[in-house]
Length: 88
Image 1 (cartoon, one colour):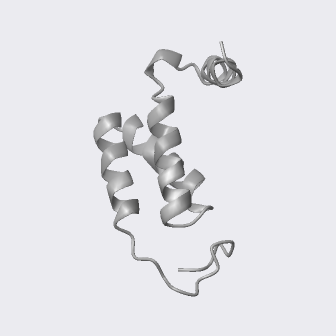
Image 2 (cartoon, rainbow, N blue to C red; image 1 turned 90 degrees about the vertical axis):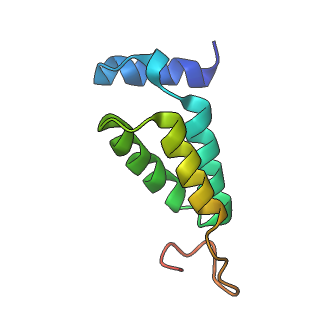
């Protein structure tokens, strides 16, 4: 097991969730896409929103693919400071 596996298992135990139902690679890929193509602070917020959607019945693979596509199509604002969480 990896540290990530151990962490997910511990969090799932704390929250009474099934660790087998956690799409770790999809969440990590989604967070990477948002952090690199939109803005870094958007990654954890998007992961939270993704979790809300999945908790309400959205298909994890479909939701992750749609959000990654949205991030990939996000317009790049020239001159924006990527470290500024208030930057567009």
